[in-house]
Length: 317
Image 1 (cartoon, helix red, strand yellow):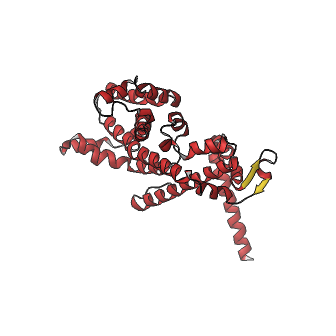
Image 2: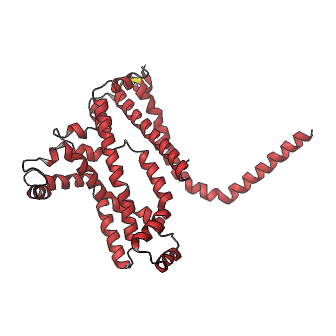
Image 3: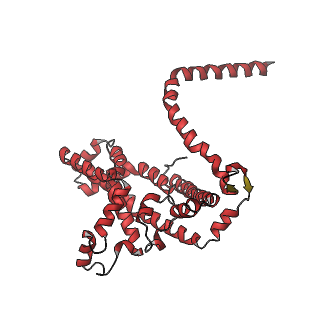
């Protein structure tokens, strides 16, 4: 009898706390509702279509009516001669995009943070933000104009400086594709990506900078011992998120820069899914390749998050 009364008391207390919680926080949940609905509709509901990777799709039967074939399309991709090619190309482009592109906004943010003239600081920030608003199509068009064989200004300069051979078609050269893709991506996005680091640096106690001046520290030492440690948690969180998208090489830019001469390095998983899965109407095969891509990304996300938690104490989970 006593245990029943105790249980009833606990339930009543829990109900009272829940009621008080909703009375104080219902506005916050109401504000959060559109975002939750968006994630539910556009992120979770489409997962219903994952079964397409395990079925033999046809237009007559739809997603759920096809014959269940299990791992058939995964094996088809693994045994395909394009498996190692697309995987290697995707890893190479992603690796250099992270190695070169990830530190760039960090360095830029710390440099901008050291500018003392407010007008000059705003001018620099605005200037480096502008390239981000150039569309991918326009960006690739600029690349084609500047590096066109025979008429490209930058291409002719490189040839005149004997940095490349005079008969080199830069846009068609496989060894030039990754540097072009990575460096133009860094130029376009590093200003915008530096915003979050600049915001993190704005919360640093100004007394620390005053203490550095008193101790005789120069700007390099200030950035190394004050600015960088202050943004390490932000750096780790963004690194984890970037590693979770390591194989999601931007389809649009790669596809627009792709041509028959550089296909050996520019054929990545996303463009292969489009050319085989969509253009050739092999939707089940394309879904299987896309799902494999997602699983690899998830693996890198979990591993990077685990390493970050063990080494810095910062992570997503």
